[in-house]
Amino acid sequence: MNLPPLTQSFVLHFGEMGSRWGISRTVGQIYALLFLAEEPLNADDITEKLGFSRSNVSMGLKELSSWRLVKLQHKPGDRREYFSTPEDIWEIVRILAEERRKREIDPTLSMLRQALVETPATPGERHAQDRMAEMHGLIELITRWSVDIQKLETETLIQLLEVGSKVQKVFEMKDRLKVVAGGKSRRRTRTEGQ
Amino acid sequence: MNLPPLTQSFVLHFGEMGSRWGISRTVGQIYALLFLAEEPLNADDITEKLGFSRSNVSMGLKELSSWRLVKLQHKPGDRREYFSTPEDIWEIVRILAEERRKREIDPTLSMLRQALVETPATPGERHAQDRMAEMHGLIELITRWSVDIQKLETETLIQLLEVGSKVQKVFEMKDRLKVVAGGKSRRRTRTEGQ
DNA sequence: TCTAATTTTCAGGAATTCCTGAAAGTTCAC
DNA sequence: GTGAACTTTCAGGAATTCCTGAAAATTAGA
Image (cartoon, rainbow over all chains, first blue to last red; front, side, top):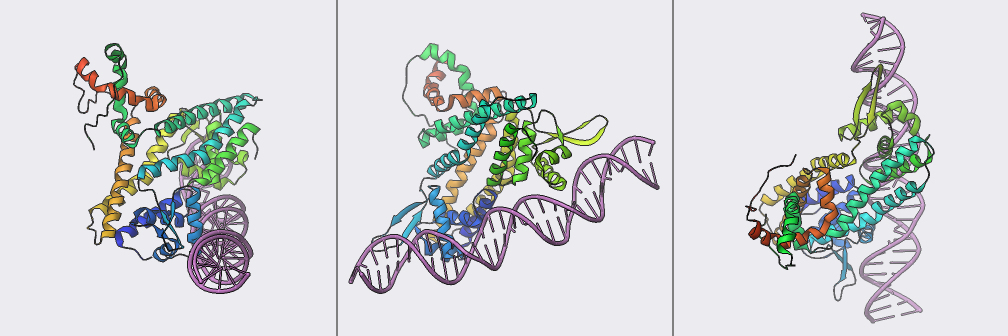
């Protein structure tokens, strides 16, 4: 491995993290490297910096592409493909959330829906079905929420996260507000910031 | 495997899902089974229903305990240990979030902080450090948010999720509210929250 | 069309993770 | 303390996943 120290510890860390998740250590390292890189890298750059085989890098990049996590571009007069991550880190989060929904949440929801339309044969199955209904409700609620907030602009989203649970206070005043204010106002109020 | 059909497809599904995440198929299946069960189960029940070895079940339960995902209880006149999941599914989500924070997020944050105090030697490292700073900010924001909203009561939390991005509308009215309602709304008004 | 540069595929060896049975450990009733 | 009931540990085989090198495929220019 042929990397400056700062980069190296980041890359190694995400290699380990990767293998705790579904992705392999290799793929984690490749993504970490691309994320930090100043310029797009080609497969040989990556091979050289991380020190595993060219074919492994090729497979890794293929997997990252299937997750839509890397962008592909060409340099004039160079036939090789150059890879990079989105510059906007929130974009990465958004894509990750979408892909996980598609690959994990949606299949789970349809399995649950399927189970919920069956007729339970015993009290035990009846109970199991109730549990699945709870889980279905929870997953659907969280999913809807995440789809929904992803439509916000990054600035607004950040604002919402910063406010956190304090938004509850606003709820409590909401009714009063309706009575008093009535109109629709358009503005961004970014008062503080971490 | 010795299970009614509804339960079986749920258990198999979470076995597969489990292995996509860090946990093994076995552990996923055990948890799925416990989640659906009407009554707490002992290790032999699980062995019999899922059909893998007693020792494997023992290891699986140990891992689930280390995640605080199972509750342990005894029946009078029976020396065996009985396992169950929290009845409240939101409690499960809360525990999962806490444990993942502890095991994955916190180490990542400290790795990043460490990297951020180093002095970069080259423009490349400088850039890498900037990227890490972005990531640190993002993770910290999301973490704070999740810690924060976990303090809400379940009902309030559900309400907040249901509202989703529409809460933005409420922001827009916030300033006017201040004027009209007069209260001191600035700077942590932290009155309640279990 | 041919050639050289580059990328992809894939069989099979390496590494890792998972699972089991046997044995050791624990706990409680007597 | 002893033994029966139950649980945990752990070495090593089984299964899975990962990674590589060699070969095939693709691509662009001449």
